[in-house]
Image (cartoon, rainbow, N blue to C red; front, top):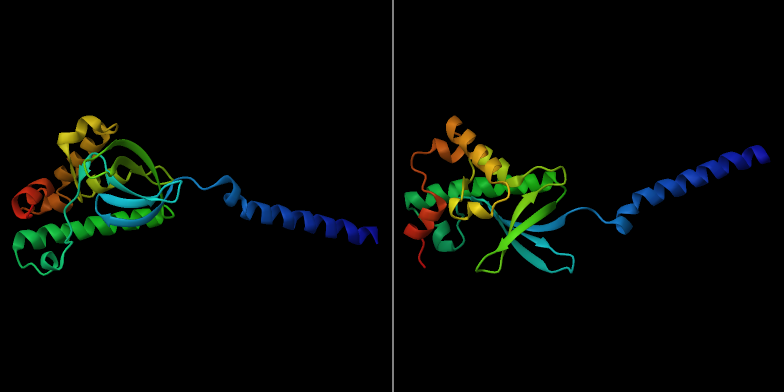
Length: 189
């Protein structure tokens, strides 16, 4: 009988240990903020620790615009189509990265903007710097007016230079208009 009791105790203890480890994240918590949605190539919405949605604008970069209204979506203007095509590519890449990171990101908030959004450097659980990836792949540009508030200033400038040199993404498109120029020239205020 005692021979039977030892294996039963062993498996009972092993089962309890395994179940405890599986449910551990409920007590310890998982790292990073849960991403509710990716708004575009440089903005996402996370749920903060109080359960409120927080809009986060990526520090250091500006990604191409996406169409927001039906009028924009139906636009035949070449400048719109070009901007929105690149904007969708940037948005899809951010969605892909966020999914790879388990739909969680770590934020290094550097500022707030006039719209109430938090400005932040965004990283995945494994340390991947989202802005760096976008710049390396030519899906965003360094936004120089606010570069002084960018802790990773050197890193983002190097990533952009590399993409520009290799003519990746928007750097391969001679018709591409910088997002900040597009907003000021083509968007109605």
